[in-house]
Image 1 (cartoon, rainbow, N blue to C red):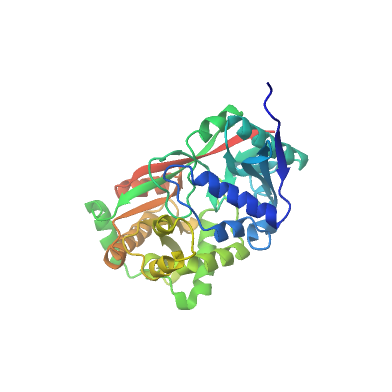
Image 2 (cartoon, rainbow, N blue to C red):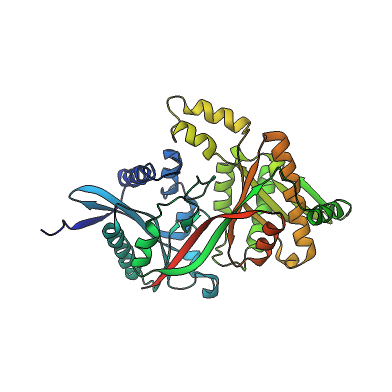
Length: 385
């Protein structure tokens, strides 16, 4: 007896997007150590009227059905800003992406990948990178190491079997993105402490917390440093003003000044470090639902996220200072101040830094110097079309 044909339908309206999100939540609920996310937040990410990524991207969502039942989902998308980048930085002309990959089994997974590839070919693409869900700034890569513990804020978490399904469909490794776990109670080695103390004695250097009274101004400062600092990195796509405004609005409730710093040299901002308390800590407790009483726990946590882990998703130093002693000194100074504040103000005991590109020697040297250990790895795959 032959298996029923898998039918893959494009999502074209609000109801379809809701079905797409709900299906993803159903899959996540079956994955060990996954953390349920707020449905409203997930709906915004796939809404062209809400997520500014759609302002420079062509996106199609798909749902797979077997005997009338939904059995998987995938996105196919093209970031037009990515098309303008140099090919040696990961994207470039002819590069499309797939993301939001979920499948009941390998057969469904292969069918979904083939449908996404067909859509990209129809759009003139010649290669595909994925999974990237959907912007490179959101959730890039497939989790291949670290399934034994829950992810922190804004990190993906995939079933272990997805790796084999994607690779058996002809995809090969393109780039690894890693996160590093840090016990912040232990303090840093003597060498790092000496570097920090030397920086504190330098009158040219001033590190200050983000000023929420000047939020818009500081957000633009961070955007400037970010786009300059990361401009030579693999996978870089410029963060647009619309995206930084959107991210700033979404992240403002979890931004605590004592955890987010800007470093100035001779009065000019040259570096920053963003640290976010791990909202997954409370999302586990409320099972990703604000109603009926989850909002009470969420509001209490937002005011004072005590006993939560901390994640450093972004940091940057202006490119003119790359490969200099000053760049690492500024990083160590911000890390140390945030480490002290996280323990004193929020009773935090561990932090996670990343993601960090596997070949980013500067950042790898910094995380190694402070004694952190790699605890999660995500892989972005490639395939010619």
